Image 1 (cartoon, rainbow, N blue to C red):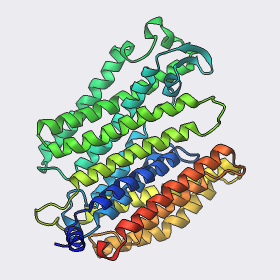
Image 2 (image 1 turned 60 degrees about the vertical axis):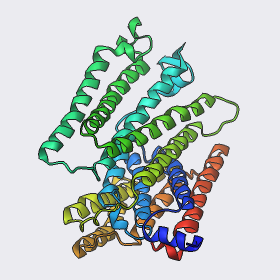
Image 3 (image 1 turned 90 degrees about the horizontal axis):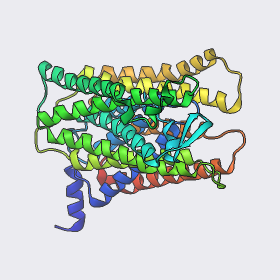
Length: 424
């Protein structure tokens, strides 16, 4: 078999060539660096910012799933994956972790910026690792549920959710009964002083993060119990991918206050997105190859609505609203909430009609134009909220890095996935 025929045969079966595999992982990582940095930009943040990043990855995942022949045989190629990745990233945004930045620098504040004390930097890195663990882990659980080795009935779902809730409750109880295991200087009674706002914030962050970690561990334990090793691997790779990125990327925080005034926090966020995106790319490569089983049945209305139409409608509408808020924050425009609502509705009206038309047709796949245009919306949103009236050196650097990430991703996609024989 010639090299050309071998390559075409690989594409026709939905298998990726080595070059495509490397490109896919790189694109997921580089795009992740961009969308995760935008996640925390003015106008965004929390769950809404997480949803923006998740939707960006979801659109790429869906586009890659359609590459080559037998796209309907990819285990994680269904429409419900869009909701899983989007809301998986958004779910982690319910937690806060800003208090740990100082710990990474070896500083513990009683009431920032007052009451500075020396603390082991490892406490900050460990806290960031746990943040990333639950963020990637729960997102991995949502994704893994889209293609279980053995489908679950009602009793199975009760067991799965029950395991997660049990883990959540256990973690919440542990951090309340044994807070000294997790909070520096707890024995000194610092956290009981109401005036020490930063200490109070640390307690709140711990009690917020711990249940998310417990929820993930409960879900993971259930999949181990039922021996769905593919689900365990998906959850494990994503949890570790985000955990390591959160922790290792935390090193950027040690540069705060240095003579070189760059966006160190943004560097950390880009590191998280890069590592998280690489983890998604690895999961795709390892577990989303077309199976030898029969093709997936045509999606029902429920899957098309909840798996694709609803997250696309909700999150893109949120992006438009948050970009408008970002413009207000950046430029001080005196636009009211009514203006924001009107602008969002102007966008949602035609998009809702397009989604309704797609649902009415009963099509098994999204229109080919939709994923790239959603990515374009995210791209434009990112640049809009990153352009204040006056650019500083650190903003010039960030925009340069953003542009490199986006340009390389587009170039790799065009080079390895838009050729005629890729049959997108």
